[in-house]
Image (cartoon, rainbow, N blue to C red):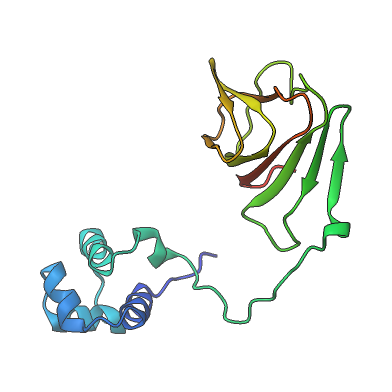
Length: 185
């Protein structure tokens, strides 16, 4: 069964967190203060256009009204250096940096151990999108039919489902730090 979301309560919580007055938000949305009050109390059902204008007035994305607020009792999960999961291939080592409980994003380090090492023969795609930064060495990133060389500090965005591969151009080790969402490993 679907869980009913109290959009009005979420609007009120965000408005108060931002220190905004009811009348100021109502004015920006071009609705009356009493209408916004009724929405916040759950006594009125706003149209999608009204919800959009409230989101704009609060300067938040629309989807924030439809997700659960974060729990206050967050547990800090630390993954110690010696406890990381490691995946070794012939020329590449991966270290999983994400601690347990990271369900929406994954962070990894990829170590190329010799020149010419590649993540795959042909570019491969997966469902996650990535952000990567080269920490050391020199690599080539191929996305689709385009290739670019990267030097330390350079970063790249790789869209979901876009075929890509990495190639080590350095005589020594190259290290790439990347995050993937949703997690892949």
